[in-house]
Length: 93
Length: 200
Ligand SMILES: [Zn+2]
Image (cartoon, rainbow over all chains, first blue to last red; front, top):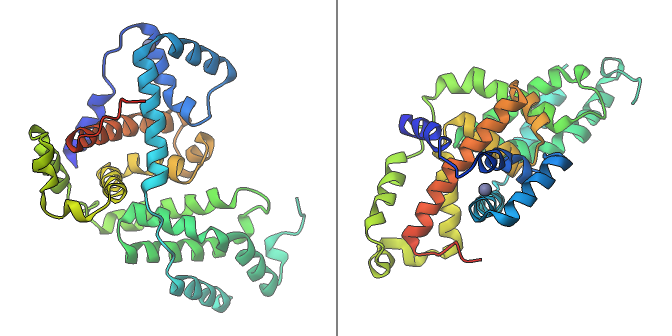
């Protein structure tokens, strides 16, 4: 797991073309998660219209979020779990 | 909000309120537990323990507030206090297997990759799903957690900060780093498989 942790520190140090691009990259998560302010959104989408690199970075970020949601399989809750929780609770004073 | 405190309820009333408000969350809770422990039995125990704690402290839960976030917080704390110490991190993830898989990168020869053992029997969708799951599982647990909470369970940054007891800034930076890591991993995978995912 050590290599993953080291790697996590390295990937964020990627160099960007302009200070603007750097700011855009720092907004990526808030944009795809719907947490950005109105002002940030305007700034973001104006930049992305003219910057190919940031446009593609946004696409990738957005796609990753969708892929995670769509392809991680949900596990079914074992039915004995629900039964056992209920019975323990009913027996608790 | 009701002025009826949990402590004033009869046992019957308390039980039915508990079941109506908290048991419907069991599906999300179990999936969270499974993604943390990567083991069905551990997930089972963790969820059971979470509900027992929630029952014990039910009078402190304010009706109408975020029950899902409350339960997730209890589960996360139980995981840190009890489970993480017991099991030596995600030993169940065979990281080296994932790694060596990527080392086939040099061979972007389609024919060679297609002939690899059981690949043909699986559909592309399943393969991608498996790959996404192993990439997610290979993340250290703190990073995995923010992805699960945000992308799989749809919590807001503020809710995540409360569940995890960390500042929102830390939530954001963990998410960012986790996503960059996953993007890179899955991009490498896409290249290996010969997908051109820059095509819009
Ligand atoms: Zn840019």
